[in-house]
Length: 347
Ligand SMILES: [Zn+2]
Ligand SMILES: [Zn+2]
Image (cartoon, rainbow, N blue to C red; front, side, top):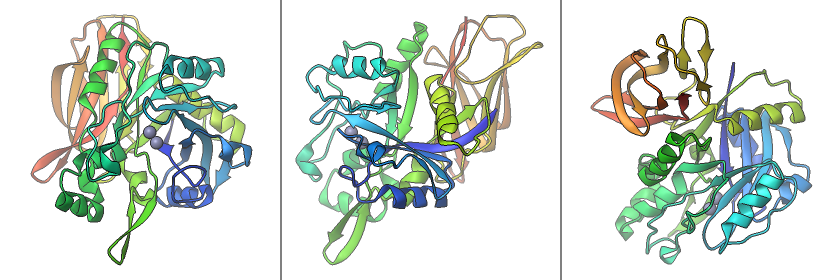
C-alpha cells in the first residue's frame, strides 16, 4: 500500500484563516505533506474558485466546516454547500451523507478560556445523532485555547505554541471506542484546525496556529491501495477512499515524523491493514512497526491490553474484539503522545 501524509482541518481567507490557499499549499509542501483538505466555515468558495488540484506539488482538496455557534461538522468530499443547522445537526449529517461525503464531528469537547474569544466554546451539543463517519479526537487550536488559563500562560503559549498541544481528547476517544466495540464503522480523525491568524502583542507580530507549525503538529497518514498519479480526480478518490475506510492514523509529527509506521493484522494466509474486519482464526497476530523507539499500547474494546517497547512489536494470543494502537515516542526522560490508529476488528 502507498502511504501519504496530509492535513484535514485548515482555514484560509475564504473564511477566518490568514492565508490564501496557494500560500497554505506552499507551507504544506515545505512541511513535507502530500495532501491538504481546506475546510473553511460555511462555504465552498475555494472549490468554486477552482482551488482544487496540485499546488506547489501538494494535492489540495476543498471541504467545509458546517455550523457556527456549536456542533461544528467537517464535510469532506461534498460538492454543494451544506446548510448550517446548529440546533439540529442531524440534518447536517444527513445532507453530507446524501452527497456521499465524509462527515466528522469536530472538536466535540472544549473548555474555552476567558482570555480567548471571551470564553467561547464550540462543543458538540447533540449526542443523539447517528450516521456520522467519525469524530475529531485531536484538535490543536481547541487545546491551545483550553490551555490559556491565565494572561501569563496565554502570552507564554503565543510564543511557545507547541506547549499548547497535549494528548487526544479522552472523552472523544471513549465515544469512538464504545461505538467501534458495537461494530460501528466510525473512525478517528485529527487536525490542527490551522487558522494562521496574525496578531500583534505590543509591537511584536505573532501568529496564532501558524500553518508551518500546524502542518507538523496533528497530521493524518493514509494508506492507499493505488499510487497517486498526479491526476486530481484519481488521487482525490484514493484519499477519500482511505479516509472513508479508516485506513489511517493520526500523528504528532513535530518531534519525530511517523512516516513508515505500520499496524497490520497477520496470519499464515494474509495481511490486513488498519480499518479491516477479519474473521477470527487462532493464528492471527498484530505486527506494529514504529519509525523510532516507542512505547506501543494495544487496546481491545477501548481497554488496555498489552504494551511493547522498541521499534518492532508483535502481539499474539488474540481474541475477537476491536483493536487499536497508541504509540508514545521515547524522548529523553518521557514518552510523548505520538500515534493514534484507527482500529482493526477481529470478528
Ligand atoms: Zn470548528
Ligand atoms: Zn475549524
